[in-house]
Length: 355
Image (cartoon, rainbow, N blue to C red; front, side):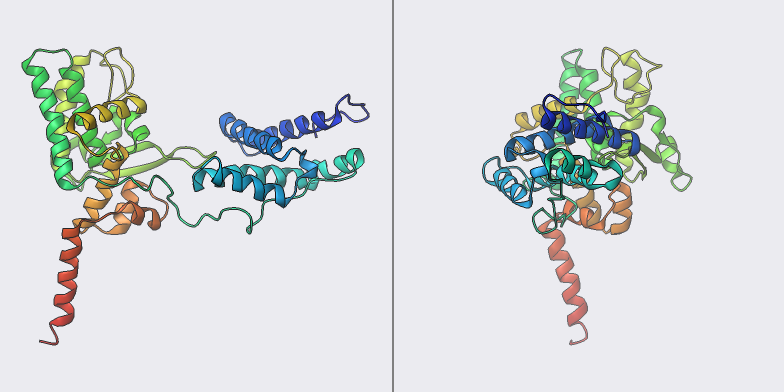
């Protein structure tokens, strides 16, 4: 309770609502150890809902939630994952209000003659049916597109070197960075936050030297949780060679030997995810590639190509840090050649006894 007992409020409805939000903030931050941005975003959703409903929480009902959800879909065109997050914020806020330990029900009864109820139920909110609900247009690179993309990255380096341009170092760094995203199946943030010490030896792959494995320390986290670590084993010798050459011959020329980052800028900073997006967009435009291709599609390609090459699905799932196999399956978009090969193998197996 964030209200002082026995005090007459000038605007009781607004004061009680603000106190509810403040108490909820403290419960989420102190009790559940959630980040400030997470909780403040949820508070903003609650205020949005109250503005839409035109009622204070102790007057909310399931019909208000129905109308708001319909508005999010029909008028605001929000995606299912966004709508679910909005509904989840309202559900959590209502859970807090109806919890008897916080005594909001009795406070509202005494002041307003009614009390808050839970308005989010299975029958009026979106169910989490799949683990991935990203942009449906996203797809992996075809192998031909991927080879052309990496060739273009290397050509940028060669042209800059021939012309004696200062940008040769950046072009080499970026070319290596895109290869690492693909060859270790990384996200942008994971890539941006890599340090030199994150690569290490793998006794089962001595041919890769100190680049046998990669410790990803900033894996995607669920709302309110810490970053998820994972170990990614090195699989592609050409990518290991590219990283080793960059670390040995290129990175020292940036002039920041004590900086921990793998990808450094000319001013001694760390390459940020937005810069990865911008550089990729420049290359995509120059090559006239499809606009649905984004840096994350390199990660999609990693999953797809490993599955096409016969890698075990559980192994791929662990490599990319998916909690559920369904997510890995959604990332997979095997080529027509692979499908035809699998069909042929199946037909040969089933028809052979008949012959």
